[in-house]
Image (cartoon, rainbow, N blue to C red):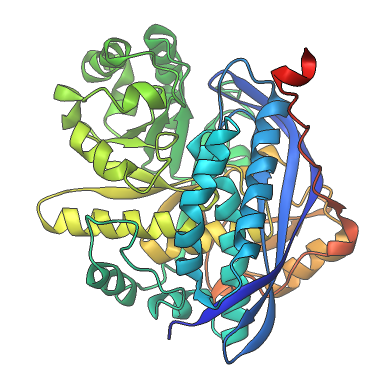
Length: 468
């Protein structure tokens, strides 16, 4: 079922995105950002032309957290990543599989971005967003939905970028996939979010009945332990069982600090409501320290990498250090998520357990949340961080006609409440039925391109020679 294509046009658009409440993770607080939209035109061999789309929030100081960069400069890196990728994808004029095109461009993309001081995680953003739009167009041209297309490997995913796997492992993993009907929402609790009482973590008006919670950490073991104890007391009031994950977003300086936190989780009675329900700890240390620091005795717990997942060999390298899992985020690359899910399945069959988790708060209502939800439902993610709808007010300032079109096309995924179209959460779950009902990558409709602005160009970098 694999098809070949060539890309004829790639266009980028944006909309401002104002948050309904501040979101603080690590050293960053976000109150507003920009939502990116990608539109591609492709020609599919034997099928004709098709248009595809993708969307993602541009997250400041996540892909590139270097302290000397401003928020605006970190977003400029993402815009430049997109521009470099566009040139590479359009330069390939022959017919190629969707994955083959990605594989051909990813090396030159990383090299070109490195020459501009853009690190690998940010450099991967451009191809990730273009790949999603290409896949959408490819599925539409073939007249198949995402799940049927991917189980048949319509994109031609193979092992050319991952010598630790073979082609049969990947095609075998894909062919065995069954869409997950319901994906539980993992409710994120940011560092500035209220803990107790009305509007707190146990308020169902805030958490939408979630049974899974993701708790942000700031890197200070004593401060984090005290806050986790408060959160645990609140979650214990809920009339149903819960599970939690912890996310430090690289804030723990080293293994000494991390050991101090884990020691508290192991021995502090006040933390028992958290430790007894803890699934895993996500990206505790900075990505560069992570890559050189074996977990040692900490490996008896489940740790995962996220920001350190900046290449196709990141998961095997993390596994060698004692990590058990890795995050899936469509903004890091749909093909890498599928490859890593294949690895987790293969390694677990040899004596695991290894796993892939769903971690992405930046997916906004519409294309962003639908495509990331579909990816997780394909690779076996049963619960996923899903709070873009919470920090941003539903469809936010999306034109009413566009929001209504998504509601009409996907009535199991959206609802109208408080004057806006919002994500519909059913007993703590998102339903995946309608995103599998029509050809394309998880959406029956596209956004209204006429209501957007072209993506802002990155600020030119002035060389030292020019300033002399």
